[in-house]
Length: 101
Image 1 (cartoon, helix red, strand yellow):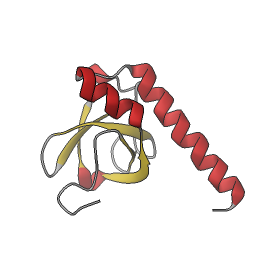
Image 2 (image 1 turned 60 degrees about the vertical axis):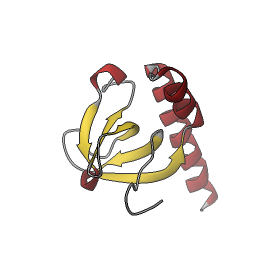
Image 3 (image 1 turned 30 degrees about the vertical axis):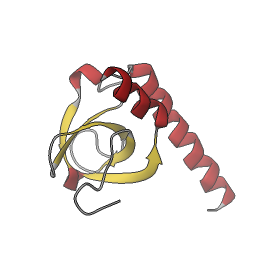
Image 4 (image 1 turned 90 degrees about the vertical axis):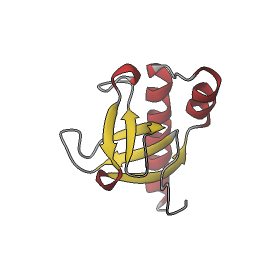
């Protein structure tokens, strides 16, 4: 992760501020050095992605290759893939918590 862009497209982030606080979403595009658009595929669909300040997000160490590939190929990603990627991250996280990592 570099200083210019602390997040990448396809990366899972935890929302720290706003009505969606403490929920997880995926970065679907990078607007500029301060803002990204995020979606979770459930409450916040890809077509209605939320523009969010990077200060209000906590990047997680998980990047979904399926989301990245879909965005590179077609410029879009299905809401199902977004939900799947977040569920995959949460299951990996809960497994790591159970192992005590």
